[in-house]
Amino acid sequence: MGLVYLSIAFVSGIYFGSRLDLPLAVALPLIFGFLLIALLWRKERFLLWGGLCLAIFLCGALRFQAVPTGDELQSYIGQGTVEIAGVVAEEPEPRNSSTNLRLSAREINVDGEWREVSGSALVRSTRFPVYHYGDMLQVRGELEEPEEPRQPGDFDYRAYLAREGIYSIIYYPEVEFLEGGHGTKPLQWLYDFRSRMAESLETSLSEPQGSVAQAVVLGIRSDISPSVYEDFRDSGTAHILAISGLHMAIIAGILLSVSVSLFGRQRPTYFVVTLCALWAYALLAGMSPSVMRAAIMVSLFLFAIYLGRQRSVMTALAFAAAVMVAINPQILWQVSFQLSFVAVTGIVLLAPIFQGWGARTRAPNVVVDSFSVTLAAILATFPLIAHYFGYVSLVGLPATFLVLPALPAIIVLSALVGLVGLFAQVVAQVIGWVAWLFLGYMTGVVGLFAALPYSSWEVGGMDTYLVWLYYGLFLAALWLGTRRKRLFSDIGATAKGAVGGLGSISRRLPARWVIFPLLVIAILVWAAAIIAPSGGKLSVSILDVGQGDAILITTPSNQHILVDGGPSPEQVTHELGERLPFWDRSIDLVVLTHAHDDHVTGLV
Image 1: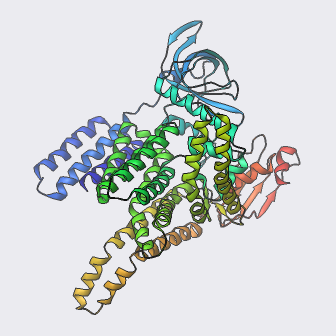
Image 2 (image 1 turned 45 degrees about the vertical axis):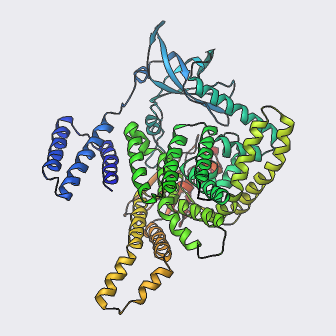
Image 3 (image 1 turned 30 degrees about the horizontal axis):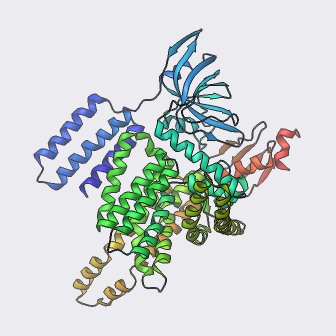
């Protein structure tokens, strides 16, 4: 557990360093002092680990403060039109009508003179022509700072890009292609291979099955229609389309269950097959940093199971997280990193409990294991999903449970379609007919659950303190559950057998000691959200409705007043959905200042 304490101390120090400026002249003497305390009183366990943890905590704070807060390219913001020559440093991200390119700058033209420059810019260009990783481009446009949030609670796009090492952006510049082949050769080959596979899937499968197959196998979601993605979101199955820790943990759990059923546990074949399949899948998904982090964490979990050291997996996970954060402190705030770590941790802590509960039933092990992994991942990640994405699916568990059995077949068959299509398109289309059956089943189940009334609630983002409350009570419930036998034995010894029957009850119902507290936690968290007072303050929110005006006023007595509606009913509805709590979606008063289109259309 010592390594866990040190890892937590380091990550906590990273967070502390992001909040407060710690001078080096203060930090170094403190670090030396705490290490001296740990050395001199090393026989005192509390002082030893306390001194080490405080020293590591301060090291974490210093590590964050060593992170660059800008780059050379940023200094040219606001200097009018510039010309930049640079290389596309990552696979382009196509959108509906545009493409985002990360351009690693090499040279900049200032006053007719080219000079070397370092730094990265986000280039938002048109969807066509298509550019690729490693292309050398020359762009002409204005460097701008990314937008700040317009009001508290809005997404901070500037901070998001800064965590990616990007401090400037160019909107729709003139782009000239110079030459290709400036990227790393293995990555160029991988991205080209994925692009050809995506074309093969698009040719061999009809929509929406083709775009869903691209998302599930390759992590390419740009071709999924908004209506299909909304169905996945409302049904609580959107994680299937995003290759993250949650996605990989569930897939690894299914692969492990199937491999054990086929090969047994006597030989290491089940472990090798599962691990190879996991990393082959990560390779197909593009080996992005988020995919690699998820694969590493899930691999640690698989190694612990194979070695019979499940109790050590938390130590390995904590240490791996600390190492990743030490290499790049900014990932601590990345949603993909948080979901990866929390999903795997939830599976490690909860899945064995649910598997023990399911072992008393007559259900096949594959079904029990799949359900256990799914339930554990959902319970662990739903507060983060509610916090970051502003919605909670009420049908996520049954929908995911029905969809998951088809997922291995979808991955294998879709990968075969993509691979065979590179050489024999007719054969790929034949395989595609079989893949279409499983993909059609998935989209059908998703659409069915999404169409149910109240399948999801838009909660406007769960408050941070509620997320911390959930996880605090979550860990407390697990701790109490693991200590129940000791508690019962102490009570039994004190009462001299008066409550001896409790031990047998505990053995018969081990899962309830965890499930019941978790249900209580969920009730308490949502009750706290519902009854939380407004603080007696008047709240005024300027809604982002484009070219128009709309204002939401919330009075100290929680009455909602909407002043104007902007030019679009869809946009004002979306903005209201993000700001109104799910338990109070009513507007008490609507005020129209004047009857211009950009004020009244959104109210129609």
